Amino acid sequence: MTEREAAQLQQLIVRVQQLEDGNRRVWRAAAALAVAAAALVVMGQARPHRSPGQSVVEAERFVVRDDTGTVRAVLGINAGGGVGLAVMGQTRVALGVGLDGSGGLTLKGADDRVRATLSLQPEGQLSLDMKDASQATRAALGVRADGTPALHLSDAGRKERVSLVALADESAGVLVSDGAGKVRGALATQKDGSAGLDLMDPTEKARLSLSVKRDGSPGLSFADEKGSVKEHLPAAR
Image (cartoon, rainbow, N blue to C red; front, side, top):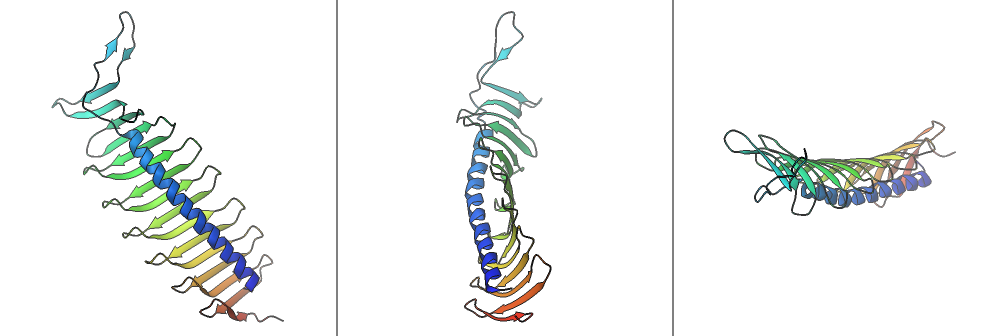
């Protein structure tokens, strides 16, 4: 890999990281909105109203109970003014739409902890957030309003370890990070058909780079601790 190609790969890695940071902020906000949109207050429900001679029943909230009196489902307006449907059981499901037009689906376990949220924002941002039993997000899948998709996988310590992004310019990248959050491996493809693989040290300096140009010719480079290429195979003629 030449220094020019290495620089292009590094630029793509930076772009992937920037997009990853943006996705993380947007998806966390979207997940919070999904939970808020689906949340319902069971107490204080209004009495249903039915106008004489009409088949329409009107109320601010409908509650479904089983034969033991346990609430199993609620349909109504939540505290924030959004509308939602909540179904309670061993697993709890809540579906809601907020005043801002955002929609969300939330899945909760028997311990009432959120395990997954699916949300759609008015501007078109779609996200799926999946958590483990400790509420740590382990997988996040999303599609931005511009159509850019991304997938992020995290460890039990909430550190993102794998990120996969397909960018709008037809380039794509996969980043693999260590437990400290440092990128240690990057695989990227460019619009022109070239591809590259970088292996980094703990300071995120590329030390070994493998590339294949658009004409199919391969290259292998070794760099020092400053990131300067010291040897390249095949050798330049």
